Amino acid sequence: MIRTIRYKDSIIAIIIPHTFSEPGITFFTPDDFSQQLAFMKHPAGKQIQPHTHTHLKREVLNTKEVLVIRSGRLRVDLYSESQEYISSEVFEAGDVVLLASGGHGLEVLEDVEMFEVKQGPYTGENDKIRFVPEKKSIDHA
Picture 1: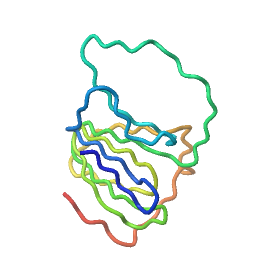
Picture 2: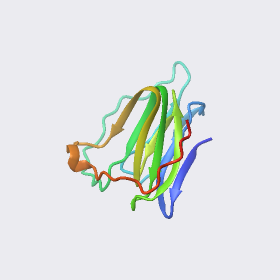
Picture 3: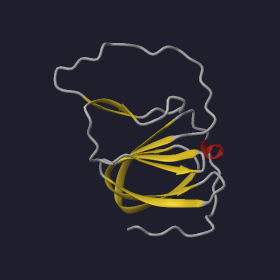
Picture 4: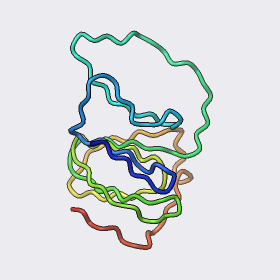
């Protein structure tokens, strides 16, 4: 059900379909990822003790992004760090993807609403290296 797209020794993406549902807390990311992703399912009445988070200096070497599809359909083309095409994945309402490494391109297949969560601060165009893929990805519409 959970899919991890790998290229050589790197995790490129972690895909959680909208049908995923497990009780308790399920973490999908390795402990050393700078972006952590978990799913939580608790029964009514469950309490999580109030807490704060400690101030820890963390070093982030690459940006990881989480996309949460609210509505519509979106194709994500996945690439290696060296800009080699890996695969294309189609997402629909409720699906979640963590884009962990490598590159990615997006094509809206149906009007889409989505959330994007990533580390900051955002530095605009300095945050990205844009490229034209050698091969056009396969259309999975």
